[in-house]
Image (cartoon, rainbow, N blue to C red; front, side):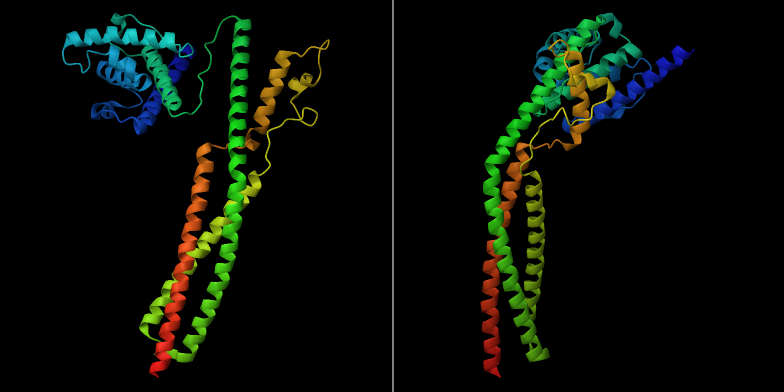
Length: 358
């Protein structure tokens, strides 16, 4: 009874995971109204032919659009003959995906098993197919991901697979980090020069704004309620521009603080100063002058887990967006400065005309 309850619990969790995965994919790859109407966490708890056909076709088109277009010639399904052909085409697609993606490990069925699809095995097929579809979507979006290796019964092969995956992942992290740091360093100095220029211009603008405010207050105190309505509108417009300038100043200081924090960051590891877990302590020593690979990778995994929050993630798009934002702010500031000078000239002219009329 315990095994039966555990199996039912696993089946409910897997069906919920299928529903969640398909819902995530629908945000990026719109599906049909029929797919959205049948999507729920219990759609594979019992045999459900229409739900299986809709979900399987959708996941195959997301995982490999070219393969789906070549193989699934019978879609949309209208007649029973097309359904029979679709089952054979689906088995062919699963075999091709297993040969292309060794880590997918999609279960293989006979076409007759798909006549009334449902239960744990069908749920397993759809769940792994949804995982593969998400992985392929992320790969096309240039987000590096890997599926776990196929589990082998041989402990030596399983250990070698895990070490290979860990080595490839560490190499990919190192290469991506190095590339991002090089790109960051090439643009860092230019950004700093532009930031310093913006800082000087903002300081000068603040002084000019302060002087304009002082002159406006003196003019208002001198003329009292006789100040023309046009001048009051000009003053209100100047206040709005001052508020926008202060927002720009605050954004600049935030950007400068971020640049100061990122400056000089390096990814390095000092094995003498790292506090490793007890089981990874042999990493610091060698055996007969040779490095124990098992202990080495255990220590490396512990170190990566410990220092993962401190490793910066520098995407190329972040650096380009920061540069574009600074250039935009510089252009806006120059325009605001020109507008303020024009307002100052216009205000002086209005005051002179007002004084001359009196």
